[in-house]
Image 1 (spheres, rainbow, N blue to C red):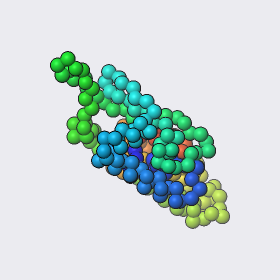
Image 2 (image 1 turned 90 degrees about the vertical axis):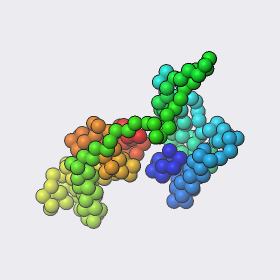
Image 3 (image 1 turned 90 degrees about the horizontal axis):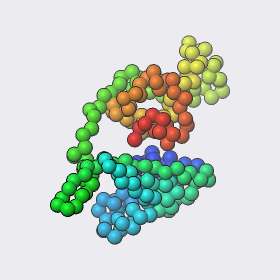
Image 4 (image 1 turned 120 degrees about the horizontal axis):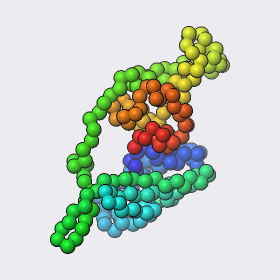
Length: 210
């Protein structure tokens, strides 16, 4: 998450009035991630204590809860005016392993986690391409209404407006679709029927994209 530029820019959101804040968010996020990867044990512990709100142990895993205002504060970024305080949860699978008299929760590393093979949906990819083309068409004619533009190019006004809305998908969601990593229930039909929120965070929640 700390290396995810889209996540960091979305996190800063409306509280940033200058592009410098976005650049700072990305820089501070990279620095924090580097500390967690290769910093001293003391530095890692201090950073985790500042970032993590709570940890919940389950029988089959661990939930790590982060609160946006704590992330912003730790990275030295301005707090948002909307008071965004909904916790972000990272869910990690874990297995119980008994070692002698000790019972431990073992979290598998990246090489041990089985992932589903990518299934690229060409119709879904084509829909995204059509959405970007629709946005370019609208932006090239700022003095005309969507209805007028749709009529001139022989397209349905409702469909054209929907495509423009889909062109506002979060960049990481678009990347997931192109790479075939979209959720199993996400296809061209369901995406067109969805009332897509403008917030990238809400888009990820609605589409179940991590």
